[in-house]
Image 1: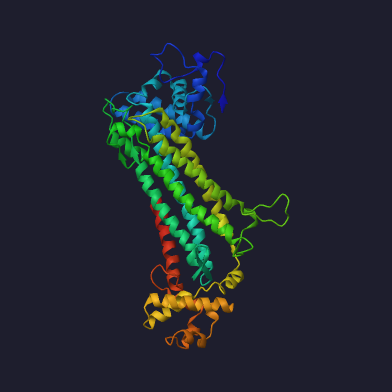
Image 2: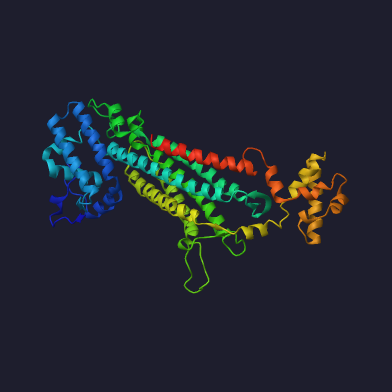
Length: 478
């Protein structure tokens, strides 16, 4: 909820600073520096950090038990107000941290002024920010596992379905459709590992660093870190308040994730065209044309491609913002949150929409089968046949190229040539060449670990399911 300040703005504004100033900031400056409605999403994390701060002050003997209880009860009331959306914002509050401290004063009086003892907004803000990032990483990983499950289910549903593989968008070699889908699952595995790295980078508690020099009060930082769920405490107070590497790590991980989704989007867009016709998108995840009645546009995939650039912009924003900042804190860093918040919001919406989209993909196996009949997909198998009969690969490659050229001029696929035609190119060819040149044989010959053979793909689906279960259990423990 929002309320406007009364006409006597100067008396109504609650500030965490101002004693050495003889003049209030200009209203235009207040508006320029205000971040309240950007960082409002940190409210519950600020309350958590403030509760830990109160615990530290109690243990250090700065506040007594009765003051501690008043502060904790006041903070709990504020938490309830946020959770029930009854907290009243004042547009003139400088930021969410000011708004919370002002509200605490309204509830418990002067005792609220003791909470900030030994604490700066510098370590207060970044503590709340890190707590927020930790929660969001867990949410993103959980959503990513749902995407992987959807891919794994499609792969299991289409076991044994062959597909033309591509390089340079040209027909290359036959693979299993399941193998193709699992390639994206592998990309997302790496994304999950990146998010775990970002998690541990963020799980360092800066509370107790003060403005930059630390605090003179005997606060037990390790105990507060355990209370808040951080894995460790910061080792240098100057670095602690000026470090935004964890935010950059987070947005970098999201950027790579979005790059992977952009590639998947491009694949879906291409495959759903009339020229390919490999896949049909569910109606609920497409749109039509305002003028052409027949159109079924892959807007979700196209918007995902577009949003990838938006996330890249957030990463560039953070890197550029930090590149020339002297130690320790500088107000430039207030601009870290819009970039991180927007990247996280984008990632969440993309992950949420792609789970049902993947689940709803319908593959046109007839069209895929038709595509397997041209493009000379088995040319490499011919070269490998010659190698197994003693011809050096480079010579086999050159000879097979001439055979392909012959087939092109004849207007047929190379796999459609007869034994006599192969024999005319080399005596190494035997009658079995024609029986070996089929899609399934080619696919199952790639039986090395990680290859496209049916047995290996079945094993890969099993590994993916186990990995998902492992990550699901692990994310509950971090």
